[in-house]
Picture 1 (cartoon, rainbow, N blue to C red):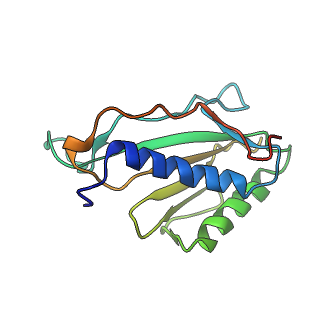
Picture 2 (picture 1 turned 60 degrees about the horizontal axis):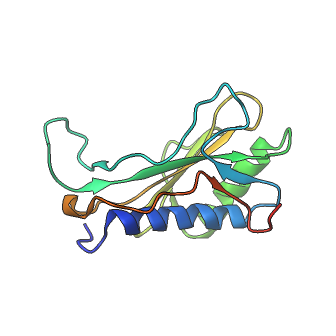
Picture 3 (picture 1 turned 90 degrees about the horizontal axis):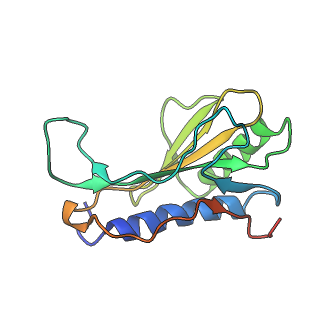
Length: 157
């Protein structure tokens, strides 16, 4: 565990990976807590959680997760965008986790971050992108700058 990592830094790095992903996509899409499809739920940042999956550990290292919907995907292009994103992450040298399929893929990098893309399975191209940080000391959790609810494509379109 990186003892110098804080919740603030962990969130910023995860957010930057999502921004870089968005910047590599064609103009017209953005990331939002709220999906284009109104029957799907909102995403967003989660509170820090213990890195240990056991319910018996009350204190220890923490990590943070944040999720966004990819909105503005042209009709019928969900699969294309899924492939663009997984190829991008692979091209960055991120390792694809076992179990990936046509609707879900997870990638991990050497600094402990993970990125996940998931097709909501509604047939409308609803894709979610989630980032999870590596563990940081519990004492480093706390005040952090709120993430934006929408990340616009850098082209402004």
